[in-house]
Image 1 (cartoon, rainbow, N blue to C red):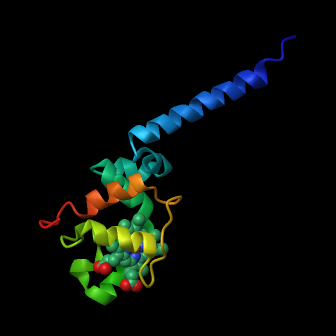
Image 2 (image 1 turned 90 degrees about the vertical axis):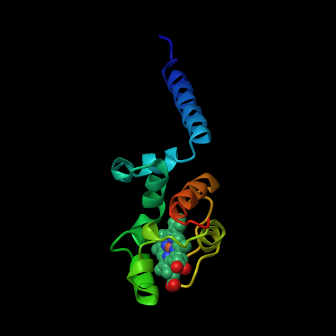
Length: 129
Ligand code: HEC
């Protein structure tokens, strides 16, 4: 009886793991889209899918961030996805350092590649970006 089963399984898992890593290096949005398949399915772009997956639970319609911005700045500025005034450096600073009611978000939670995608999405309607 040859006991190669566990070794073959381990090698298979290793190969699958490196394939996943290689895929993430090629496409930084892949991890977020895999984590939240529903967001990926309803988004019009991979960048939107990352925003929905990583920021959506506070910044979609009924989120705490949306409601806080609604009170502080009114309806035009409440939904980040509709904003035309957001600048990349500002979004990056708020995400990494936090802002009042919003906690700082680490690179383990949102990678630099994911933040790039989020910034592209949130600044897409800013004529001055
Ligand atoms: C836990 C909830 C939460 C999460 C998750 C969250 N935010 Fe926020 N965010 C807030 C709150 C609350 C505010 C309003 C801050 C305040 O004024 O108290 C805010 C404010 C902001 C602002 C400032 C808007 C302005 O007009 O000044 C930006 C930009 C922002 N968030 C981006 C993001 C991005 C990008 C993500 C995802 C990477 C994210 N947030 C995730 C809660 C959150």
